[in-house]
Length: 183
Image 1 (cartoon, one colour):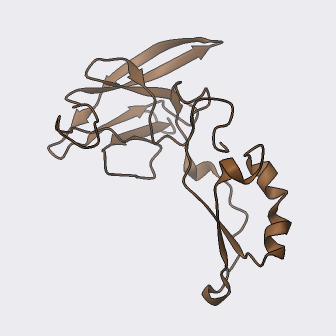
Image 2 (cartoon, helix red, strand yellow; image 1 turned 30 degrees about the vertical axis):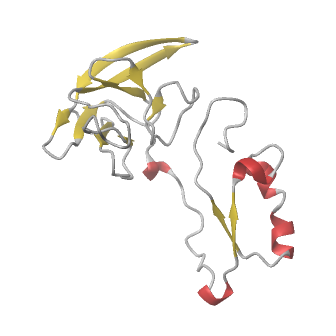
């Protein structure tokens, strides 16, 4: 592989949440599993080309399985923004349910995110002393009428007036429809 070629390592397992470029939460499970997930004996990763509303599978790579139920694959020429989805047991391609980016919606392909490209600007922030923490648990989708980050930012002064010193966002994920819980 030529030096400087972008690569991504795709890893998936039901119980792992790794901060990788891309990941999937499906793994081998027993039919009686309470999770209700399908048994995945064979998993492929599909690299997707999209032109307008038309999606085509550019490449399909079999992922290697290990005895612990992990599937993995390292793919060259797979940098940030690359669209992908997973195919279980030769079925229909599915988005990565733990993806950091679903640019086309919850049913579309996932996109590779390179977390190392983010430019941090808060290196000098020292945090808040534990004794001064007053945490507000915020559900972005119901905190404002539009359920967006920008709308929540407009309400931060009101939280400060209440004595709130920190905000913790409750878990959220993309869902079909216009209000995607703030994403």
